[in-house]
Image 1 (cartoon, rainbow, N blue to C red):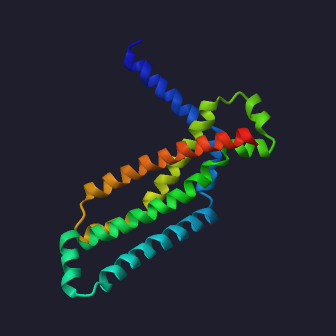
Image 2 (image 1 turned 135 degrees about the vertical axis):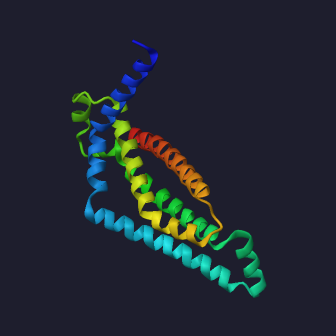
Image 3 (image 1 turned 90 degrees about the vertical axis):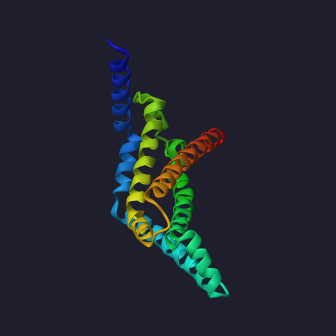
Length: 193
């Protein structure tokens, strides 16, 4: 077997392990739950609209028309609005990602089904990979929901699609750093309890 086919078979096996994880199955069910989606969309839209209103209020409250026109000429309304949207998304993900991830270890111990997980033969890798896959799906849903706002920012000008994609990738990395930190904290808390 060639090294490439060995790597491909390892990737296929890793994908099967993630897709066959109980944490992924539970996260997939909660991500598509109508009342949870409605709550997330409501909170996300409130944060984004509040950020857009705040940017508009700051720009319109500048004392002279010349100062606000200089700011808009240098930055562009689209750049200001996309910055506000990314700040709202960062705040939203900073609150909701740890809530979704924190109980991955503590939940089974408190719910007294940790022994069943251990005895079922699920490897820690499969358990963790399913949770990470669930967070990626959650991030994807959040980004798809915020896409119309970014299209609005692109139509205002001042921001390029490359900058929006770059910021989305940075936010993706931030979410995974947040997941790792939350899982580490969850491990420490679950060991104390």
